[in-house]
Length: 223
Length: 127
Image (cartoon, rainbow over the protein chains, first blue to last red):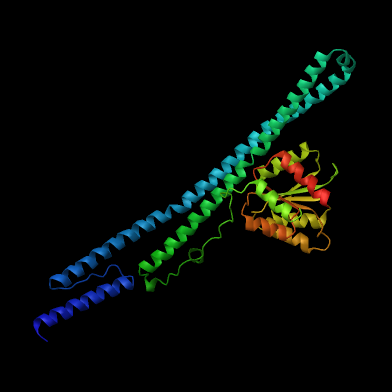
């Protein structure tokens, strides 16, 4: 084997070692080959890729450690909004109670003034308009009460996002596990929770299916 | 027509949601309401006491609303109990699954008191 053949042979062996090192996830192994131009450049490129992969792995690992904190923040939003909804509910309940008390008084007054209203059409009309207003106000209060259920929809969204983020973190850990060579002497095995993807809640609130669509489906099934 | 004295079980893991539904039912003339925070608790309650109507969410821990519905339908003593789902679960396939599992009616959140009244009246009209 002449000199050039020997050089190429060693460089190719070096390349093979470097390539094998990347495949077998040891990013620290250098492509230590003295090469002719093209093989030398290739080795350097591989070395650069190897360094970039090491850097990327490290950054990804750091970023993924933030995910549990961010997921917890989302859960915090849910807890906070639920507390506030309870506070608003307390106010709405009092408003409804007050309104019901006014309505009761109004009904009693109407009964007492029935005779006079029969003789005074204007008074009767005013009484009817007042009754309509009270009913309208009651409907608004009820709409406010039920509209607070938006919080549940929002909470479902947040739970889904939180669960998806945790799923992404698991995938990142698995990816890093295949990119880095674990110390076999440490005997460290990945924790069971790292290899399992959490079950995402089945939330489809984003799809704009309306109650009328549901009603149509119910009707088709005789309900 | 449903009776004002009927006993209703509201099942939802969000306490604010249970409070909203309970208030709505009270305003509709149904004050006799009890609560459960998940399907498992609800199933224990319906097996112990008599309820005239179950109003349940879908997504809950321990046992979700669909599994609660199926468990009720599979129990010979409970199989005809009216079940109304009130949920954010809006996928047509899931709604169909609930219908096939025997739900009596289905309400999407957020809802109105009118819708709740309409659905309850309809459930008891068919019963």
